[in-house]
Image (cartoon, rainbow, N blue to C red):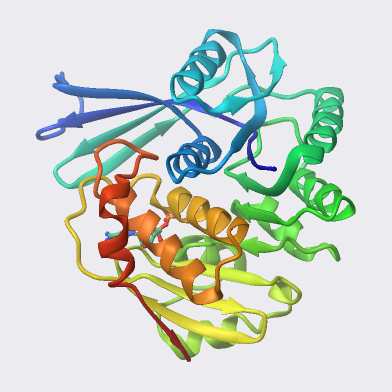
Length: 311
Ligand code: ADP
């Protein structure tokens, strides 16, 4: 059985490193990296690197779509996307002066009919899946309840679904009576969802997770970058702390965290170990220049430094 990773709006992610970035001027790039991107593809890569069987699905098209499938094949990641006639998108991240400026194309517009055909494909793919991850934004054209429908199809087939999205899509998922198995918002996404400034204080987060929106979700991982995570599992709350590490490129660390959760769940690890695995994969991603890449050789030593405390 495989972990099915969903990327509805994949991209070719282009990362430019620039010494000091100048507006309205020429910026020459010494280091350019191109990867098959979109959050779900980062998840797929990290799952594969962790040694689990993965099938990448979603929607893509055009020559950019071809590039994406070629890159996945190079990484020996099985993929079965719904193809459309339009081009998939490019997303550009400029890394400069310790900052990151992103230029994101919105990508193709999906026809309602295409969305329906995709959902049928998804339903069939579930026959081979033990777990589903859904990551990132929806392409234009699909209504904001699209992920909610996917969660419901997962539920009908008895397959747990992990949802990592934001904005109205996330709200729709949470408002529905059929709940996802897990979500992984960061502080920004949480603030946006609840329409308030969320801070990282433990009591505040605990109280906030009592919000009706979160009822019935088995695992909620609020990832907090360099300070780790705050977690609700069933009725228990956990503070997860991580060691200080040398961060090279934090892009995609949330996706690596989702991959860690998925693999740990598949391996039926304890809650403590699921959280340690998820933090470790997140940290390992930040230690590499390449997005959605982890060096497994460093896994065990970092894993042992993650502390999970029930609060
Ligand atoms: P997202 O990419 O979704 O915003 P986060 O930034 O919260 O997610 O990162 C997810 C996880 O990756 C964190 O919980 C942590 O384990 C690891 N991580 C991210 N940024 C850092 C950092 N600066 N230092 C150490 N670990 C990090």
